[in-house]
Amino acid sequence: MASLTIRNLEDPLKARLRVQAAVNGRSMEEEARVILRGALHRAPPRAQNLAQAIRACFKASGGVELEPLPREPIREPPTFDR
Image (tube, rainbow, N blue to C red; front, side, top):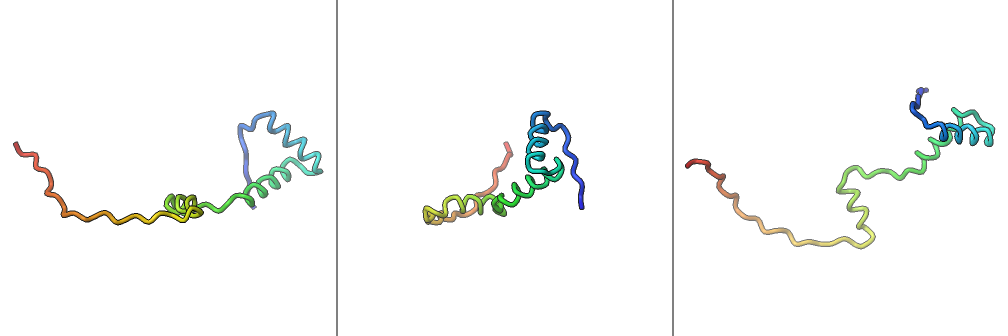
């Protein structure tokens, strides 16, 4: 099992954790584990990349079909001769 140290935890937050742990009959450490498990269990799976995330946002609307842009020949590179 791994260890986790949390630094710079605000005093009011630590006090709330202590109270919540006492109400639930757990140690502060166990209460923190329960909170982390619950938060990570509820988290939706993240899209693998930005395109998938955007696609997921607009999936309900059915999407949009765009015409492909016409291809043009490659331009000559600029010359910097004077």
